[in-house]
Length: 493
Image (cartoon, rainbow, N blue to C red):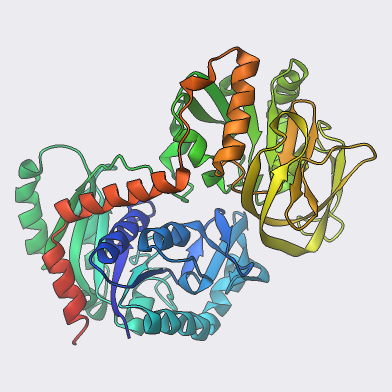
C-alpha cells in the first residue's frame, strides 16, 4: 500500500489545495506514482471524468500535477451547496440527493465504507497518496464523526502537516490555537507546521518560528512565499473575484451568488491583452467588450437576483447596443425565453428568462453528465473546434428557426446563437485554443484592434509550466528531507 501524508489547514483558503498540488508535482518529478485524495469536498466547481462521473475540480488540478487522469476515487464525496443550509450530495460521482446540513451530518458516517474503498483502491495503485483536509480540524462543534480531517487521518494513519495563512494575520495564533484544540491522539498525528503566503524577509520571522516550535512541540517544515503561480482554484474565497484588471479587451463575468465552475475563464485570464473582471453590480459592469453569464448551482434564484439588482437591465441595454453576450450552462439557460422547474429541482415554478436567445428550458430530475467534442456551426465563431463537459439538470429546446451553436461529434447539437448573443452548456468552452481564439478574434474585429496583440498559446502546456513553477517553490521553501522522513516513518504510535 502507498505511503501517505495529509495536509490540513487552520482555516479555509489557507493554501491546502495548492500545497497538495505542489507536493504531488514534486513526488511525481522524483519518480513516484502519486495521487491526491480528499474524502469530502464542498465546492460549486466540479468536473466530469471520462466515465461521466462528477468530482471536485481541486482534485482534478492535483491529478494534473501528478500527471494522471482524474478519478472520482480521489474525491468520493462532493457537496454542492444549493442554499445556505443545504447541499446536493454526490457520492462516487453520482447524485445521492439534496440534503440539509442537519440531515447530512446525521448520515455521513454511513459513507465511511465508500471513503475507505476509494482510498484503499488508490493506495494499492500508487506509491504515495497526498490527502487534503477541509476547513479546519479544530472546529470543536464538528469533530464528532469527522470524516475529512483528523477523523480521516486516524482511519488511514496519515501523518499531518498543518498549514497557516500569514497573509490574513495571526498565523502564530492560528497554528498554536489549532494544535491546542486537538486532543492528545490528534496532536501526535501532527508532524509539522507550514506558514503560507509570506511576504518579506524570512530571517525576521525566524524568532517567531522558534517560539512556535517551543509552544507546539512541532517543527516548522516550511515557509512558503506568496506565490505568483497561475493555478486554478475552486474556493469561493478566491482572489480572482477581487481583480479588476483592464487590458486591450475587457471581459466582464457576472459574479452570480451561486457561481459555479468559474475556472471556465482561467484560460482567458492567462491570455495577454485580455482583462477578465468579475462584476456584481451595474456600477461595476461599465462598457465591456464581452459579457459572460457563467454557470450557477441555482439558476432561477440567480436570475431573480440578476433582475432585482439591475444587472439584467444593464446587460440587455449593452446587448441592444451591440455588445456580445455569452452564457455558459446556467448562464445559457438564463438567456432564453423561459425557465420551467417542473420537477422541483429548484423549488418548482416558472420564470421569464432574459429573452436574448430563442429557446426555453425545463429542468429534469436526472443530471446530465458527459464529456464532449464538437465544432461551432453558427455565428461569428463558425468552424472553431472545442471540447468540454456538461453538468446540468435542464433540457433546453430551441424554438422554430433558432440556430444551434455547436454540432457535437456524436451528431447532437448544443447551444444557441442569435446575432452577437450565444450560449452553450459546455464547461471548458474557452479552454480549447481554437474556440478561445475565435471569440477573441471576433472581439478584436468588432473593436478594430490588431489581432496580433493577442497571444496564442497552448493552455495545457501553460498549466504544466505553472505546476513546475509551483514544485520549484515547494522544493526551495519546504524542508523536503523532513517531508520524506515523515512519509517513511508514518504513524508508529
